[in-house]
Length: 204
Image 1 (cartoon, helix red, strand yellow):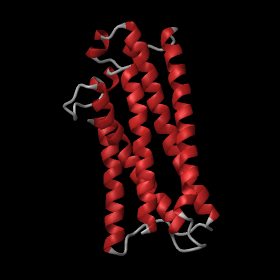
Image 2 (cartoon, rainbow, N blue to C red):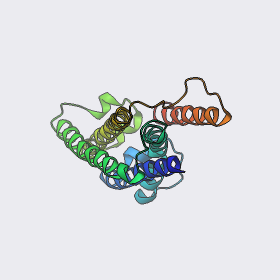
Image 3 (tube, rainbow, N blue to C red):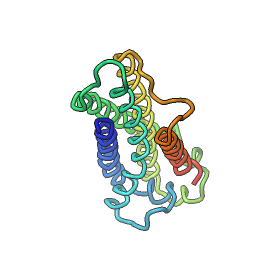
Image 4 (cartoon, one colour):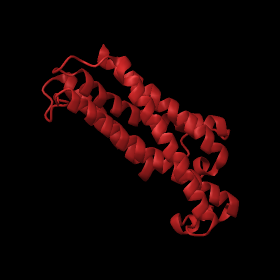
C-alpha cells in the first residue's frame, strides 16, 4: 500500500508540473504543440492542447520515477521512509526543473533573436517557413524550455532515487530476471511506458 502511495505521489506531481508547464508554453507558442507534435488530440484550444500534452508527456516519466522511488524507499532493508518524507524532495526537484526550464527558455529566445541559432536550420520542415520570425524565436524558447524540463526532470529524478537508495543501504530495487507474475508485470509495464515515451517523442 505504501508503494502505491509513493507511485501516486510521483505521478500526480509529474502531471501537475507538466500541465502547468505546458499551459505557459502553449501560450508562448501554440505551434510547438500543433505543428511539431503528432496530431493525437483533436483539439485546437491552447488550454486543452496543453492539458492533453501535459498529461501525456509526463505520465510515463512520473510513473517510472514513482516505481523506482517506491522500490528505493520501501524495499526491505532499513525501516521504510514515510511517504510524507518524499514530498519536500519531490517539490525541490520540480522547483529546480522549473527554474532550469525558465533559464533555458530565455537562453533559447536570446540566441534565436540574435540569429545564433535558426529554427529552419534545426528543423528542416515545410511548416517552419510559415511561421513569422517572432514565432520562430518563441518556438525555440519553448523548445529549449521543454528540453531542459526533460533533462533536469529525468536526471534529477535519478539522483533522488540514488540518494534514497544509498541512504537505505542499497536495497534491491528490481530483479533483473522477474521471478513472480507481479515482477514480470511490473517489468513489462516499465518497458512499455519507456517505449511509448520514445515513440511518441521521437518517432511518431
